[in-house]
Amino acid sequence: MRVQMREGERARSSRLADHTTPFVRSEWYVAGLSGEIGRQLTARKLLGVEVLLYRREDGTPVALRNRCPHRSFPLSHGKLEGDVVVCGYHGLAFGADGACVRIPSQALVPSAVRAQNFPVVERAPLVWIWMGDPDQADPGAIPEHPWLHAPDYTHVGGYLHVKCNYIRLHENVLDLTHFPFLHGEAVGDLAYAQAPFEVAEAGASVRITRRLEDHPVNAGYGSAIGNLGHRVNRTSESWFKTPAFHVAHATIEDLEGGVGGRAEFHFKILHMFTPETATSTHYFWASARDVAIKDEALSEASRTRAVNTFLEDVEALERIEAIWSSEPDDFHEISVTGDRAGLLMRRIIARRAAEEA
Ligand code: FES
Ligand SMILES: [Fe+2]
Image (cartoon, rainbow, N blue to C red; front, side, top):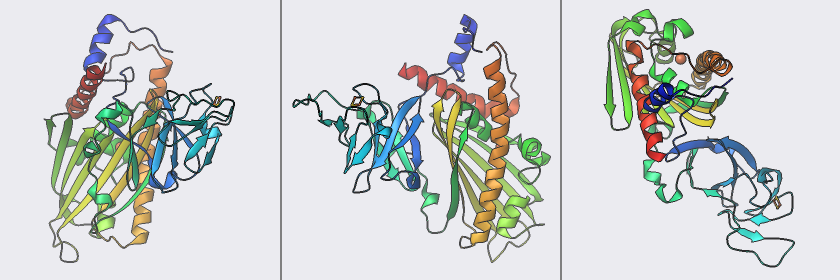
């Protein structure tokens, strides 16, 4: 049940983004994994809009609005002829740029008839989409993710559909205090949750850094590095880079001689959140490491560990979303010191959404 927001609530939410905040459209979001987009017509709702994804014959990805401009038939239920999409209702045909190239029932094809086309850029293994003003789409603004290509790293990744607003996911990955309670000590113990941290805001990004010194390595990193039982310094930097992209850097310094002549190991977790609706999110993730990069069994174990951990987050966030959806919007959550980075992130998203209004 949603109720009308009162004035005070409206003012508050305009300062701190929540599920009522309009999506930030002037941004690159992940539309899909490279492997998901092919010569088949694929439908996906992004930022509340039905989008059609496919590849041209030369392999370039295409994104069109999945809604025929004639009578709103979903183009994904039509067919692909070469690079042209043919609507399954009256047969209007659209090129990859969205321009109508054929109206079977008449000779004249007015140039104004077009399916909306969205800029897309492939940076394998990700395909990015821009759903704001196309003239503002600058591929140079796509967040860097070199660890998915660098020869000294390997990664695993995947996709989860989550029934919650994307801001809650950003909040979750900026909040390192929930580890021992929601996930257990394999991810982070109470000492980690209590370790001192720093929050830094830079432009429209926020970083939280937490350092735990001279502490036993946790099971996740220890089994990857092969230094279970060793004492380590663990530094975690979680960056909210854009409303679409968060990267967590973990650096483990082994204090007991290291492994294989090395004492420092790096792990990167990329969280890419693309709103589907106000209460659902496409969650693309990747987990990269610069240790034991040829170890397939370790990669499989790390995939399982990551998915199991993320599913714990998903279950919690879906429970929270269900409560927000079933009660009036007049509940006031309290915040604690550990929420500082999340609050800054919500302020940034609110500001960016207001700038677009
Ligand atoms: S609805 Fe697509 S051609 Fe009529
Ligand atoms: Fe978590």
